[in-house]
Amino acid sequence: MNVEKGYVNAPIDASLDLRSEILRLKKERNAVIMAHYYRRPEIQEIADHIGDSLALAQLAAKTDAPVIVLCGVHFMGETAKILCPEKTVIVPDLSAGCSLADSCPADEFKKFVDAHPDHIVVSYVNTTAAVKALTDVVVTSSNAQKIVNALPRDAKIIFGPDRNLGNYIKSTTGRKNMLIWDGACHVHEQFSIEKLLELRKEHGDAKILVHPECPKPIRIIADKVGSTQALLTYAKESESSKFIVCTESGILFQMQQQCPDKEFIPAPPEDGTCACNECNFMKMITLEKLYNSLLYMAPEIKVDAEVAREAVKPIKKMLEMSK
Ligand code: 13P
Ligand code: SF4
Image (cartoon, rainbow, N blue to C red; front, top):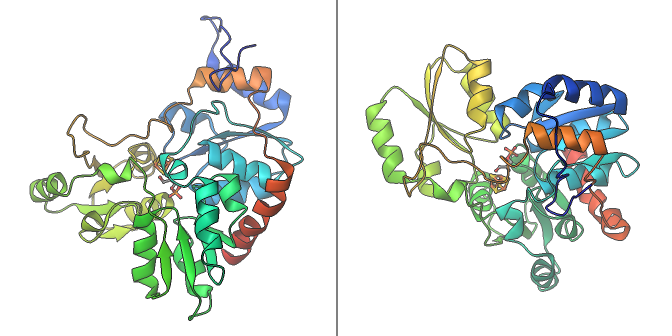
């Protein structure tokens, strides 16, 4: 078995019905399959649970299954493993990373934290386990506002690594003492305000849905800024029937599934190379990789025990403060 590239690269018999084989193996292994909303439609269709980053962490914390197959990116698998060290956590392609997590190397973040010892360290879940180990409380885009609001009014805060989410939370919570790490996600930074304004002109009746990882010029023209789950809920509950969606395009599948009579228009990236913005990391998990991961029970997520011992504290604090 070859896992050199981050996934099991073993040949698959072309006559196999992959969907039924995955379901059979899942039962045999007593595994639960979880997927993020940005995943390919065929992965979302076969998953037991689909959710945003917060929901996936909450589900991992409470599942009884001894095996979690997490069709998300690497940091999501790490979060599940840190919460459930006794379980086998598999991410079918370990090289599914995150540009935002990469924008915050732990050694540099440590220097920043050490230089501001009187600050509470709030880190977005899109970080490595080593960064979480330097953190006081983890947040996701679903709960960042609630958690920052719950900190003492005069607290000095470090917020990392996303500058867009950080600036958004700083303004919505009215915090003055917030130092923000200068990181960003390559997908959410790519939306073009000019193209978005053109789309809005074309579809005057559409509501604009924006993930808080987008820069301020995009956020300020939004009808709703929120996590993937919050945008989905807004679309479901809104009386509007048309939406322009400024986040990774995988969410459109779930929006269309849950609101079949509504229209969802993906906002295009700045370079105009395609009609929508895709996260290359989120698209790395295919049915073939999922099948092989269940067949060979690999590749497994491993987290250094010492790092995990520290990283679990701010993750558990987040789960506690999200209730
Ligand atoms: P959510 O927390 O909204 O699921 O977002 C995760 C993510 O990676 C956004 O790019
Ligand atoms: Fe990371 Fe951006 Fe991909 Fe989300 S969309 S996983 S933040 S690179």
